[in-house]
Amino acid sequence: MDLPIRIFCEGVSDQRFLRDFLKVHYDIAISDKELNDNKPIHNLGSWNKLKIQKPQITEILSEFTSLIFLDADDDKVIEKPGFEATIKFVKDLMTAWNWTKYDIFVLPNHQDTGTIENLLENVINKKHSQIFECWNDFENCLSKDNTLTIPAKKSKIYSYLECLNQKDNCSDRNRDFQDEDLWDIRDLENPYILKLKTFLDKHLI
Image (tube, rainbow, N blue to C red):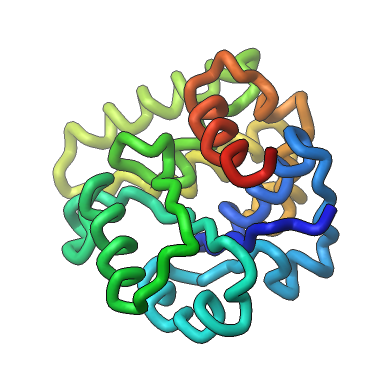
């Protein structure tokens, strides 16, 4: 399929997830080599590197619609704290570039503050939900001592996979979101999946 879009996202985990989502829902196959070459899903490496993508988006890839996926970071990210600020950040950037051939989806669900890890937490195979229940108890225990640091959300996803004897697949680059024993990215009754599918349908159907 000759894709009419190009995707820009923040990191490897986003890139792998979106690759598998496109395969499951649209039968669009993207090879590991293409992904490593940032084709057609571009790993920015950081949200603020979108600022230097003007030549890519408005010149080199100008025939395509650019779909931009960014996290709705919390207020620690001063420049774009939360959903509304993330939308504004992208819109202001595109206005400055005089560019209209784009669309944005804010992770995790185009409404709440959060990151790709919040999305992943909500698309696990529910038969393994007790892992996160235990993790939440662990976080609650740590929170009682203000000298301790709560592990990053990335650690939560890593630990989920490690608990399921997936040590070789814990890193972002090795995750297989099509593995139905670990993930459920097909369930359109899941609002996280439905929101993303509805967004992509506008550009792929």
